[in-house]
Image (cartoon, rainbow, N blue to C red; front, side):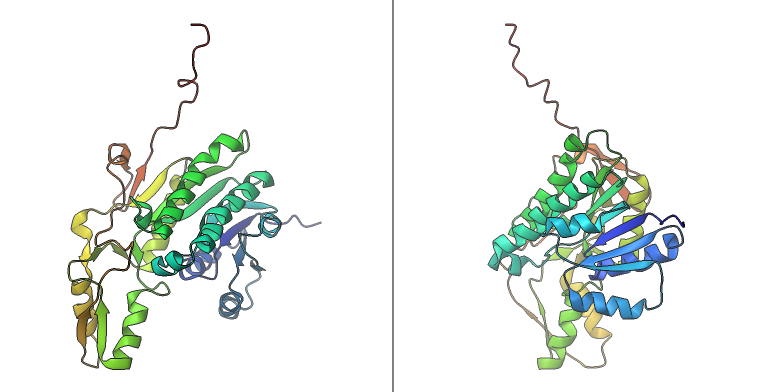
Length: 306
């Protein structure tokens, strides 16, 4: 009887980052592993299925991370987990707060629980965002809680082999719903593109650089750390500058107009907090890691002998 290959599970695998990750994993690990795509987006899964048609090393699981029995089913025989499933749009999460909590917090805890219960998962990498740093939005707060759930997983995983870590992304070009998707529609509709504020800045990665960052973090995982790109404030870009460059490359002339930040939307993003800064270590030209000390619960126990 032929022995089944171990599996790699990508939650949110039909999303922009998830699907790019699936394609990369098929190229680099597809001969040794089966890649499982897990997503609640039926149409997104169908699109990816059409793109990868004929590849025998990929499986498609339609389901939600909110549904523990379903994610538990998908976790059977899994060796590595990339947890990308999340609601990511600030304004929509503000308007639908508990739905964001159910997916980004409860869904993350469900995925962690299923990974621990499987007994086979060796690495679990959670995809976070710079909006989790000093969050001012509900979405950022849910992603911060997700990070903390992942960091705390080591306290309940016991002697199981799983290592749990997080990777914080800045803005990734080519993801769904970003300005590079919005601006062409705006330009076509009225000849104008919207920039939130002339002073707003962001870090940017291409999707190829984002996947490279993710896989480098995966290789360096020891458990309990947060990985960030090796970027400094000098690497930030003003959105207005990005908009002017984009507009100058278009065949149609247009105008830039300004709006105002949504409630909870930051003018400037950071990749780490001031509290985390002393614990940052540079691993390579493209990767840094934050290894904060864990809680020593014994040290805080009252001494009953006194």
